Amino acid sequence: MANKEAKTRLRPILHAYLVDLAKTGAYGKAKAGVMRHFIQVGIVQAVEAGVIPKRHALEFGENPEAEDDESEAAED
Image (cartoon, rainbow, N blue to C red; front, side, top):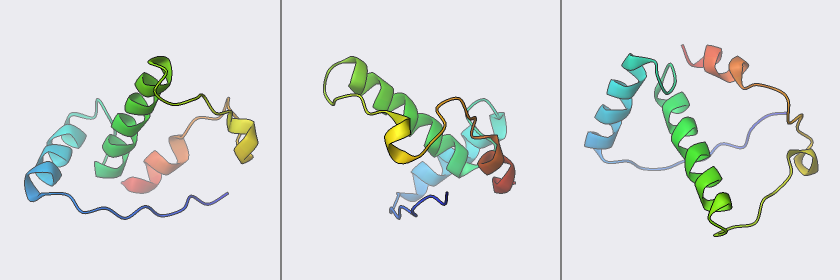
């Protein structure tokens, strides 16, 4: 199942931070992985705080047990 592309504009300094974080490898191997990590963390925090309701991966045809390793490898 292919992901829909999300386009966004970021300030140059934010791109530089994403590159710096990717170089550490702690949050992803490339800018996309770093962005994905922080988006996921933010969504989890919003769900836990009750800002938004929890959704279930099965509703979107996803396997909740599957890891996102394939897309991380594709970034390199």
